[in-house]
Amino acid sequence: MENKSKVTHRILLLAGNGNLFKFDNTENYFVDVDDVYKNFKGKMKIIALSIRKFMFMFNTDIIVAWLGEWINKVDNYDTVIIFDSNLKIAIVKYLNKHYPKVRVIVYYRNSVRDLGRLQPEKLRKYNCELWSYNINDCTEYSFKYNRQVWNPKVLKGLLKKKEKVLYDVIFIGADKNRVDTLISLYSIFHNKGLRTYFYLISNKIISFDENKDNKYMPYDSYLELVNKSNAILDLVSQNNYGLTLRPLEALFLNKKLITNYKQIRDYDFYNKNNIFILDYDNYGDLDDFIKTPYVEIDSTIVNKYDLNNWVERFFEL
Image (cartoon, rainbow, N blue to C red; front, side, top):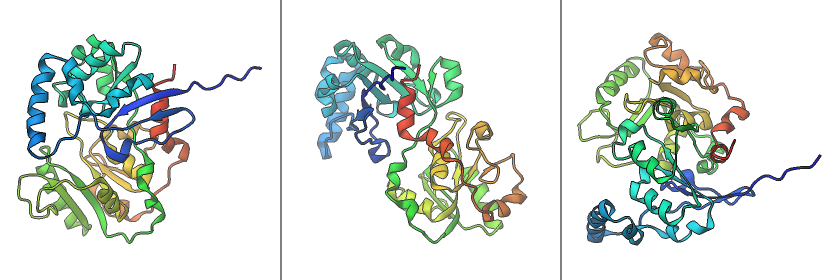
């Protein structure tokens, strides 16, 4: 019987998330992660952003002057994947006009409800495929589904370091109208004697907020904190109700998860010992939940959420 060789794909991934979505060369594909737009600094950045916004509204050919080096490499690839956080419709329009043979995939990493500028009906005019991690959006907008993704390579040996556990529950994230919920949960955790570390991006003054300067925390620093904690707190909003990165961070780092995403019970990695669901599980069991050891999930399940497998699913028939 003849062995069929695996098709090699050349993929340009426009992620803009630093090392989190950066690939190495592999036998199956090559991915080059680059900034979507040119980098400007100081006053030039403010001027450039203003001009670019204006140009994008009227002339898609002019945008090439404002794009990063990746635009000169498109001919080297058969597929371009663009994350919604880096996308302007003008980019898809430009690719469709000048590179009609290149497959363009727009991957929604946020709900359509959070991204008014990226309406599916406008994108579909330019011969691109629309995919999402959000099962509800896939059903409502006829997207193709590809599960949430994480890249264990960003750990850089973190799992090999045995850190002393300093916190029971940590939360690092933006306000997003979740402050009242966080205040309530902090009170519950505090009354149970759990050690917490809450770091908010918010203009509100909150006594237990560790972020006194309202600055974003580098992702590497965040992972270091996760490694020193028993559990991650995950709060999804009604607008972006789905599997966030937090459950995958917990999964790859063998940490427990406390979440308000009730549908997490439907995922293959769900284990009641590892995941506490707010307003579903009994708050009286929180102490035991934190104290009991993490149950390691089978690697065949964990690997489904790896970046390499995520890319391969775009090419499954």
